[in-house]
Length: 286
Length: 206
Image 1 (cartoon, each protein chain N blue to C red):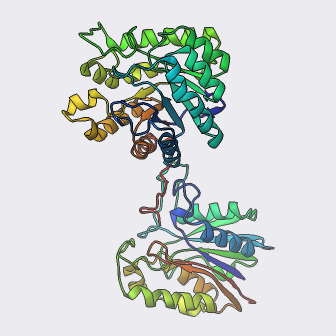
Image 2 (tube, each protein chain N blue to C red):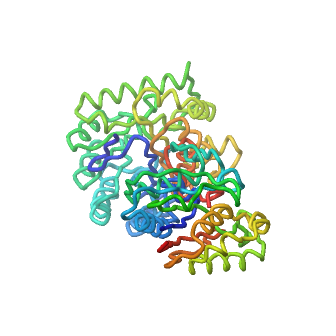
Image 3 (cartoon, rainbow over the protein chains, first blue to last red):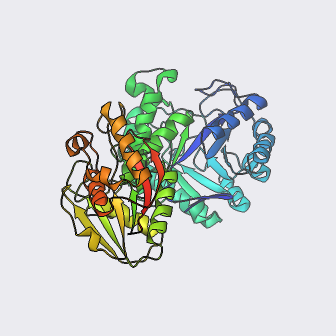
């Protein structure tokens, strides 16, 4: 069982985590949902499309506008409260690396702290534990938040991702986060070349074999763009291919921009695997 | 004597259609009819087509659920279970139109007759479209509604085979057992997938 704050999910459930950015400069949506009403409309849309989780972010992952902790909190805390009020059954995740923001959003109703910079602020784990929230352990190879990778190298990127995320997961449990509320994320593109992200995808079953539920964040990322030589707005097909492979390897949560397409891929994979009956199977059965 | 006619579609087996159930109404009618058939009887003979197109002798459920043996027998077993019928049943495979058990000797028995109408009623039907299906099914429906066993016994077997009527042998056997029912009800007739399903209940004073 996976417990995300006040919500629980079966072990064979594949969950869509829809990205909702309250940023001006995120790479894919480029500020489209920065305004609070636009962001709320986005939440309504992805919920209608079947997302189980929304991941609300107030700071672009890569380099960009300076966003102070106060400004990040201004973008996210009240917004989380509004989403909580309108959607009691929705899992609310917040993408942050700052403990001060993490504490405030949990108080406002967040269920999950997506620590996208892998424990950079060690107090964030304590905050999640105290709030009874779930926690995502991300592999960033100790990178500084918002710094792009440069000439990174690994002996074995998968082994490194497993070592660091599992260590972080154990730290989270020791800090008081429930064991069934800890996820690990290899963090495609974070401190990784395209080669690394492809290898992580190819060998994702090794991460799954740790027993910790795996979250993947693949959506329209540079490793897809470089692999297919395509700009940001043409990476959906590549994203979905990586989504299917990751789901087949056993990933459980899929952070995504396009909910409908992602849901279809996950349903298809689940049915191929045999854990989800087809929606309507009448062919040759009449 | 009493007899019921029910379809033998795999979709009547619970779970085979996936998350939705396109057969809810048909299954409900069939289960109620099986219950009415069995009411107060000592035993049931289940007439199942076997070894013809659309009536495989050893049907393995594509969903992976357990099941083997004639498709019609599996459908009958499911319907009887859903109807909570506890009387002893004997599965009687009918492989030819003119043969079968000495049905008139089955004193106190009910007949549960498995089989479908034509399978050629549209572009998406199992047998594509054959315009002769419409009149053929109309005649079957009339006979079932009227308790006209003689008409069933005299079915055009050649045409029925061409129209993929899985009930062609079992309906004929029913007709020989009960040439004229004193009361007959046709409770269901539809062709949601291009082949015709019937549910009927016959009672005979003889």
